[in-house]
Amino acid sequence: MLIVGLSGGIATGKSTVSGIFEREGIPVIDADRIAREVVKPGESAWHAIREEFGAEYFDDDRGGVMNREKVGQLIFNNAEKRRRLNAITHPAVRKRMLYQAFMHFITGASVIVLDTPLLFEVGYDRILSRTICVWCNTDQELERLIARDGMSETDAKSRMRAQMSLDEKKKRATILLDNTGTKEELEAQVLSLVATLRSSWTPTVIRATMATVIVGIVSLMLWRFF
Ligand SMILES: Nc1ncnc2c1ncn2[C@@H]1O[C@H](COP(=O)(O)OP(=O)(O)OP(=O)(O)O)[C@@H](O)[C@H]1O
Image (tube, rainbow, N blue to C red; front, side, top):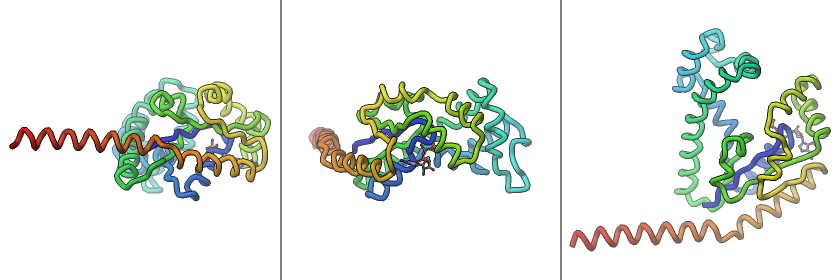
């Protein structure tokens, strides 16, 4: 199974691209969605965060839901708290991503997309042979972020500055999707990429290698048994 990493800057179009992949029948593992799931009340990460940060970061009148905005404000200016939060959530997110990837593998998917804003920061690009960076110009990024989230220009700029630079991500990615044009132009690039990925031999080679290894192990066990 070919796992393709998908990343980019804030509001450069990752969700727009992953929506097109899903529509084309390519499964997407969404790290942001998983990160929200692992902190739901009752999950082990939820318990650990509550213990670490205190009950005041949870809305008990809403069933104990974590107040993401309050936690976000705390960790934005506090590197140690951010490190502690990541130490709790990252392993839980990784475990669930691996589980989803495994399920796609056994159900026969030949290509899947791993959509994670921290693809390069965490170093997944070192283990994935194909990585996508969706990019647009800084002015467009700012404009789209403000239009979508309704935040102030100052807040939008500080969120953008807190990320690895888009130029660095573009340098490290193996596939670039140019989102400086219209959404239709972006879609045309994604559709052409889908066709290329589907024609790749990599999943077939991986499956053939695994089948050979499994047949080899089973033969060896039978030979020893008899
Ligand atoms: N080519 C485009 N032209 C105009 N608007 C666009 C274009 N591509 C995406 N957008 C809009 O820009 C905003 C950000 O896009 P999107 O949500 O896909 O980005 P993202 O990278 O997933 O964001 P985040 O980093 O917050 O997860 C959305 O409102 C989307 O509709």
